[in-house]
Image (cartoon, rainbow, N blue to C red; front, side):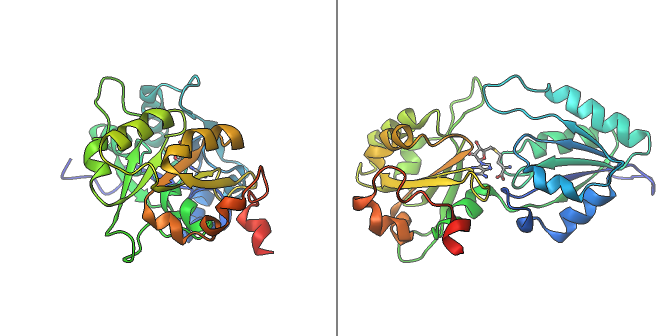
Length: 267
Ligand code: SAH
């Protein structure tokens, strides 16, 4: 729609960041505070909702991979109905709403219904998670860039071109990759990436449950299993993992010894 009436209802797609509520933007905190209705993802840290007004209605519409999830069309309908009824609607998503958050699909549906969409960017887990263990995703000494990739391709689609990624020289930050780690490692090695390439797994970054481990690519699947690293987690693959302080300690890493959270470590 190109000519929106001045009072066209607006829906706010808001990024809640990766966990720690201090990583919320000021704009996200204000938008949450002003909301009448909040449709909340399951990856949103409960502490973020402390910004909501006591009278706000919070609807949990999470869609964790593999679990029963709210139908996407239902989410669209509720947002449209509430906004048309004059409610201030916030669609709250973990991380950034436009990074693997279906934010694009939702914005399309809202605009098609004649609504305005405002996006409040959030800190994506794929950048903030590695940073929490001192792992920069780009570093000119190691890599010319970073690729944010899904490990969980949409049904019927081919998924990422792992061969091209293996040959790209980029840091690979893989979202939703834990369940598919075996396939991903095989595909990257078949594509030419060395099995000795450094890798990291960061689970529940910026939450009190955060755990992480580093290993080489060929050891990724075993490390995930041995350490019990659960979703939500990021896989980071590339030479830049050497910069993480944990990398230097990895040969002595036993069990949970180096799995302290950064919050504990900082104290
Ligand atoms: N929009 C989100 C990503 C949603 S996709 C963002 O920008 O961060 C869901 C995937 O994101 C999870 O499977 C996991 O790979 C990653 N993820 C989200 N929050 C995470 C966290 N706190 N720690 C580690 N990975 C996380």
